[in-house]
Amino acid sequence: MPVLNCSPVPTWKLLINHSMHWLGMSGRSSVVTPLFRPAQAGSVMRASGYALLAAVVSLDAGASAIYGINHTDLAITRFSVNGRSGIDTIGPHQGGGGGCCYVAPKHWMPGMTVEVDWQTGASAASKLADEFPGFSDEVKYDEWLDKLEAQRRKHSRQVLVPDYTDQKVCGITVHFLPCDEIQVTTSCFAFRSPEYPIKTPLLPQAPEVCPK
Image (cartoon, rainbow, N blue to C red; front, side):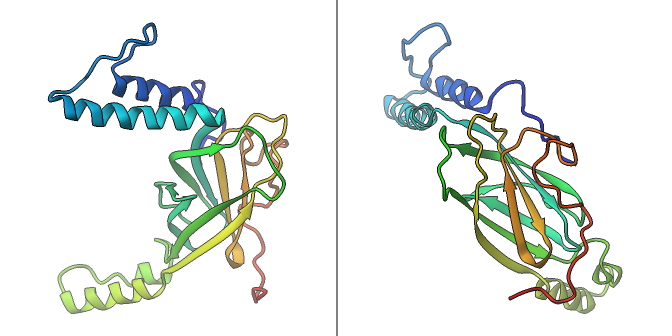
């Protein structure tokens, strides 16, 4: 399960430090020293560093990792939030992720959303996994791969971000629910703790027929 508490070092500070490294700046000096030669290479890297630094500072926001919690019987083979990858494949009824980064605007606004894209597929605990034929028979292996590919589905949702006014923000956690439903939270509390805002159990009772 992912650790959902915030890192002791805010990610925005790490990003700024990384940008300063690109710019050839120390924490005690504002003098820019080229890190590369020829000069053109240094200019490109400094420009990239300035762009990243400006983006982070101008947001004045909390940035941290992207986590996921899978409440379904399928595997989440990939997922992203606003185009930023969550990195991990998440098995059924498990947690994972850790990709960088979700940057929360300083001020929450009504109607604020994130775009969650994800792909589902057969898990290692599925019947299809039990049918794995091995690698010796190429024809059977290819047929098995075709079945595996046929079970993959791509999904996309615009999801409302809950109000985090006057709250500390610790990245974003995506909850993958039955029937391709999604919930998100920026909470710093651990999943299943009393303070955690999403109360859906890890093994929810899935409906026999999903609503359309």
